[in-house]
Image (cartoon, rainbow, N blue to C red; front, side):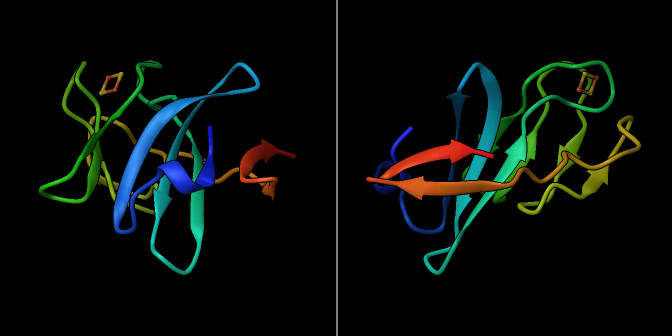
Length: 92
Ligand code: FES
């Protein structure tokens, strides 16, 4: 996944190094989350209108930073350490 492919003010889901990730670009910085819903393990999808990560399985919703907005998930999407190398996002 290339950092420059993520539009400013938007999120993108995908895989990096075999991990499901949810990446948000604030314009100043990227936020990289482990995209495994903490309810039962589905992958969330970016909701561009509400600027949230929404789980299609049972309706959990997370804020851009991964904190829970609505259950049934109880825990946040964990933040992952990363670096950008030659425009590629590398999970640390
Ligand atoms: S797996 Fe995401 S809400 Fe159930």
